[in-house]
Length: 591
Image (cartoon, rainbow, N blue to C red; front, side):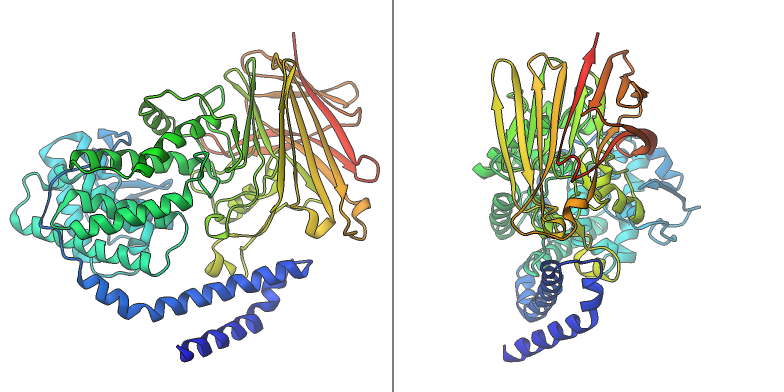
C-alpha cells in the first residue's frame, strides 16, 4: 500500500509539472486551476486503484460461468424496419451517418469510417431489423454475423467493441433477439453463443469493479440484471446485478424523475431499456425492485415536461433531434397518462403553460463531473412554442456532431440566453490532452442556481439567478419570465448584478441577449430596428421588443431537426452593463 501511495504522489507531481501550464491555459482564476489539477489527480488515483484491484477482479470473475441456456427473451420495444434487413444482407451497413459496402467481406474486417459507425455496428442493435424481416435468410445472416464477431473480436477485450457501454448494449441486443439468433442454430453455435455471453458477464463485472463512472455504469447494471434473469444457472449474477442496479438508480434518477446528467435524451434511452427489464422480472416470476417501478413512474411526467406543442423535445444539455417513434413508443407504456411535470427542482427545469404557449426553462446547475460530458452552458436559457409551432429554440446538437461543432453547440451563445463578453457560463475539458482525462466534462460552471415560481389568476412568473459568470466577471445573472394567463404575452427581464467580490472592468463588460428562432419562423425588423415582426408557419404573428433599444438579426444554425443542420436566424440585443444593468423585453402575439 505504501508503494501505491508513493506512486500516486509521483504521478500527481508529474501531471502537475507536465500539464499544469496546459490546464491553466484559458483560466483566469486560481479556482479553475485547482479544479483542473484535482481532476487529473483523481483520474490518476482511479487508474492506480484499478491496478490494485486487478487480483480481486480476477478472483471474482472465476465465479461467473457461461449460462446453460436462455429461458426468456426480453422484448425490444425500439421500432424496426424490415427493409434494413435486405441492406444488411447485401453488405450495406449504415450507422452514425456513414454507409459502408463490405463487398462480401465481414463488416468486422473493413476499415472503420468513424468511431460512431463502429459503435453502431458492434452494439448489434440492428439485429432487431433482421428479426422484423422474419425470414430464414435473416436468421442465418444474424448467426453468421455474430459468429464472425466472436471469431474476430470475441476475446480481444480491447478497442471500441469492449468499451463498457458498447459491450452492455451488445448483451441487451443479443438477449432480446435471441429467438432470431438461436432458432435453427446447431449445438456448436449455441455453445459458442452461451460462452460469449459468459465472457461479457465477466467483462462487465470487471468494468463495474474498476470504478466505471457515468451513464455507462447504469447501462452495465441493466445488462447484467437482464442477463441474470434470462439465463439459467446464473442466480448469483441476478442477485448481485439487481443490487447494483438499485444502487445506481438511486444515484442517477432524481426524485423528480430527471437524470442526474440533465440530458432529456437520457430519459428516453433509459426507458427503452428499463421497460423491457421490468417485463423480464414479470416473465421470470421474480419480484421487480420497487425502486425500478417507482423510477419508471417518475420518469414519465418528467419526459412530458420537455415536450413542445409539436411533440418535439426541448433542446437542452445534449438533446438532439427528437426520434418521434421512440418517444411515442415510450409514452405508450404510460398507463397513467400523466400530465407534464411543471416544476422539477431536482433536475433544474421549469415548464410554463398558458393558452397555446409553452415555455421550458433551464434553471439547474452544472451536473456532477462524471455525468457532465453532454452538458451545455445554457444556464437560464429557454425555449418557447405556440400551438404546434416552435418559435424560440436553442441550437441543440446533431445526431453525430464533429468535435468543433459539438463544442460550439455547447457554448452559451448557442442558447437563447444572456452572454457576457462572448464567454460561456461553463468551461469544458477539451483539447490540449484534457479529452484523455476528462472527455469533455464541465470543469467549472454554475453551482448556485436559485429559482422562484409564482402563479395567480393573471400570470405565471419564474425568476432565477445563476453564478456562472461570477468567477470571471463578479456578476450574477438574473432572469425573470412572466407569461400571461392567456399565453399571448411574455415579458422578460434580464439583469446583471455585481457581487461583493469586485472584478476590475466588470462594469464595462458588454453582453448580448440571444433569441434563436426556429427555421420555420420568419423575422423582419420594424420600427427603425427596435422591434422584430415574427411570422410562424401557420400564420401566427408575434412582435418582439427590448427596452426601446436596437435589435439586430444575425445568422444562426438549428441542429435539432431530423433533416440535419439548417440555417436560421437569431434576434440579438447588445448592451453594456454600465448603460443597461437590467433590460426588459416583451414578446406579444398579434391579432
